[in-house]
Image 1 (cartoon, rainbow, N blue to C red):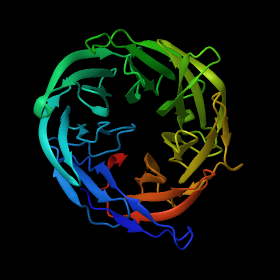
Image 2: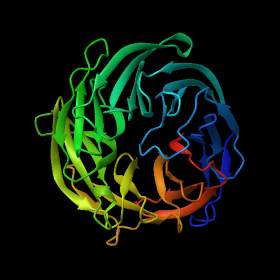
Image 3: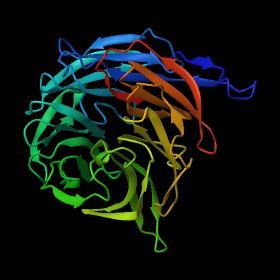
Amino acid sequence: MRTMLVLILAAALPSAARAHGRVYTESNAADGNEVLVFDGGGGATPIARVATGGRGAGAGLGSQAALALSDDGRWLFAVNAGSGDVSVLSVHGGALRLLTRAATGGSMPISVAVHGDLVYVLDAGGDGDVSGFRLGAGGALTPLGRHALANAAAGPAQVAFSPAGDSLVVTEKATSCIDTLPLDADGRAGAASCHPSAGQTPFGFAFAPPEWDWFGNRYDRLIVSEAFGGAAGASTVSSYLVAGDAVDALAPAVRSEQTAACWIALAHGGRYVYTTDAGSDAVTGYRLHADGALRLLRADGKSGDTGAGSHPIDAAVDGSALYVLASGTHAIVSFRVRGDGSLAAAATITGLPPFAAGLVAR
């Protein structure tokens, strides 16, 4: 049973307390990548520091989901952008153990996704592609092949499975496309289709819990950040309906009123959406409605302040805790998500490596 730290939050009632889990990131160091495990309650000293066996990029990855945790919490996957492979680690409480590595076939893997025993890795080298694997006993990865994206020189940012696990979604920053790749019964990907995004430079994304129409048909809502090439105050967040190979805008894009909105995290069952604004040192919060409409929680778009020069990138949610990787200040800044979606500053984890990437919390 994992050790839990109870932290009394200053913004809460005196009697309120919250137990924190683990927060994972990777060093992304060029001379040897490591996964760092921290207590979600804060503190600079990692609970664990485990080598992935591969090398990091030694520079920012420009991606979301450099780390992925399996749904059952038993497996952690980490991309090694400098050595062209992905590592599989077993998880036992706060303890990690490297089990295996597998070459992706590309030169710069930047994002990884897992669904059941299927694992897909997104590579940003060359034109960009995805590599599939089947997870076996002892963490072994059996290759399922490499598959091209919809466009050349795509500048990809993230790969993820659809909620049903029957397709992949990839964002292409350079072409403003949202790709879908169908998966067959063996988990092998088919040809990628490009769906134009509502805003420029689609980056991070997440699926909200499904909704049903009047006829009982399920539809999946995809929430995507659009960084608009980093133009000041131009970023947006959009929602899409995803059904099979169709990706259709559900509602107009809503500006974050901040700059370089890139990473997405959902809280309180998908009721609230948060994007980190790398160019504004801020977090923007939205209320997500059942029909896909998004509404800013604050008129100025600034739900949370991550600190001057923080350059926030990856984000992750665990219960009512929102964690943000601040690449500029080498920290993980955390907030408490209140019932109305507003954010209260909580603990800060400090002393991270300079090019840390990826964030998982559980």
